[in-house]
Amino acid sequence: MGLPTLKEYLSNWTLEGRTRGQVADTVLALAGASIRLADIIGRGALDNRLGRIVARAGELDEQKEIDVFANEVIVSALQDAPVAALASEEAELPIALKKDAPLLVATDPLDGSSNVDANVSVGTIFAILPRHPSSDGEAAFLRPGSHQLAAGFFVYGPQTILALTVGHGTQIFTLDRKTEIYHLTQRNVSIPPEASEYAINASNARHWDDPIRIYIHDCENGANGPRGHDFNMRWTGSPVADVYRILTRGGIYLYPGDRRKGFHQGRIRLMYEANPLSWIMEQAGGRATTGRDRVLDVVPAALHQKTPLICGSRDEVDRVMRIYSGQEFKGDRSPLFGRRGLFRALQ
Picture (cartoon, rainbow, N blue to C red):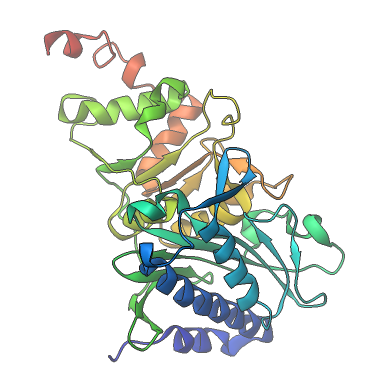
C-alpha cells in the first residue's frame, strides 16, 4: 500500500530510548487485542457474546458479556508486555500483571457497549503511564493525565481505526482487515479551531447547569442568535464515535456534570476515558476541560473517579470556559436572545 505501518511508525519513534521501546511494545499488544475484538464485534448476532447483561460493573453501568470478554482479551494481550498492572472499567481494583515492569495501562475495554446490539460504532480507550517503584496498587494510578506516555482509542465501525498519540501529534491508523495490519492514514491531525457541530445528550437538558444551557441555547438559535450561524447536533452515545468525528472534522463534545443524583461530576471516567481522549485532542490542536480546569491537570482521588468532559475545537471549548468563568454572558442572560427576549417574541 505504501503507507507506513503502526509498527514502522513506532519503530521510528523509539530510536531515542529504551522506555519508548517498551511503550511501543505495549501499544502493539493492545493493537493485537483490538484486531481480535473487531472480529468478534463484526460477527454481531452470529456470536453470543454481545448484548447479554451479566452484572453491574458500577454505579448505573450495566456490564454485558462483551464487556467481560473485551477485558479478558486485553488482559491476555498484555501478559507478555512490559506492564505491571492494568486499571480497567470492568475491574474494581487494578489487575496485577508483571510486578517489576515499568509501565501501567488504564483502559475502558469496550466504550459504548450499550450500543453494540444497535450496530453503532464502539471502541477501546487506553492510556499508558510510567510506574513509580514507590507506589503500588490503586495509588500507582492516581496521577494527572499529563503523566501519560501514550494514549489512544480504537473505533470498531465501518473501518477499524486507531487514533494514537505518543506526545508528537495525533496520528490515525486504519486496519487492513485482509493483512491484519494497521497503516498510518492520517498524519498529524489538526482539528479546525472553530466548528458548527456539537455533541451532547439533549435529553438531559432540564438537568444542566446554567453555563451549559447558555452555550447550547446560543447554538440552537443558529443564524438568528448571537453566534450568527447555524449548528448541527450529533450524538451517538458512544464517546469514541463522537470524539473521532470531532477529531476528523471539528466540533465540540460535551458530557457535563448535571443535577441528577450520581451525575454531579458527569459520567465519563477520568483515568481511562477522559485523560486519553483529552491528550489526543490537545495533541491535535484542540482543548479539553471540565468546564473550569484543564482535564490533564486534574489529580485523581480514586481509580474510577468521574469527571465532566468538554473537548474538541479550540475556540468552542474556550467559549464554554469563558461562560463558566463569567467572562461571557449569552443565551438566557442576553435580553435579545433569551427565552423571553425580543427575537423569540418575533418568531
